[in-house]
Image (cartoon, rainbow, N blue to C red):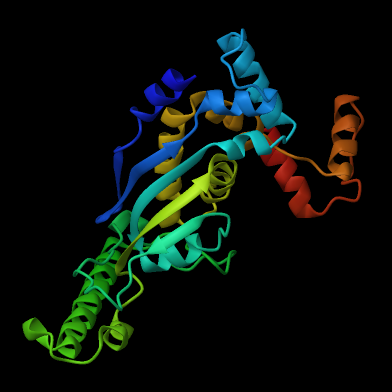
Length: 279
C-alpha cells in the first residue's frame, strides 16, 4: 500500500503549470490516490486481492451513484498565482483551506494581467455577466493599451505612497488601496478530491469566465496524473454527463416512441437545452 501511494506522489509533487501571463499552479503536496478511494470504500487497510479493473469499476460505481466520501480521502495542496479579480471568484468555493499572500506585510511586485487580443470582447447582449460577440483588432489593442497604462500608473502611485526605495511612506495596508484588480496575488490552497472535481466541473464549463477556465483546465490535467481512474470516472459520469428534469424525461420517452411533441409544458430554454444535448 505504501509503495503505491509513494510512487503516485512522485509523479505530481513539484509539478508546475504556467497560466495566463504571470500566473501558475504548483503542486506542493498530496495525500492519497486512486487506491485510497478504493481502500476507503472497502474499509480495508491491506492491498487485498482486487484487480486494477475491479478497482476501476468500483471507482466508477462510486462516482456514478454520488458516493462522495471516499473521494474526500484524497487531498492536494497547491501554490497558486492568479489575478485578484479571479481570486475573488475562486474564493466563493468555500470547501478549501486558503492562506493568501498579504499586502499588509509584503510589497506586491509589478505584475498585472493584460488579456490577449483574442480574449477581449464586448459585453454580451444576452448574458449580463460575461463577454460575447466580436470586437475589432484596433479596439482590442486600444483596450490593452488603456489597461496597461492604467495599471502602470496605479503601481507608480502605490510606490509613491510607500515612499519609494526608502519605504518611508504610509503603511502598506493603506497604500495597497490604489492597486487594481488585475494585479496578481498568491495563495496556498488545500482541498479534497471530491470538492476539487466539483470546482473543475463548474469552472471548466464553456460559460465560465475565460481567465478562471484556463486555471480549471490546468487543475484537470493535474488530477488526471494524480488520480487517473477517478478523473476518468468523473469525465464519464459527471463532466460529460447530463441530467434531465422529470418533464424532459417524459418528452424523451415520447420521442423514443415516435410520438410527435408540442413542447409538453417545457420552456423554450428547456427545449433548447435538450436539443443541444441530443445533437
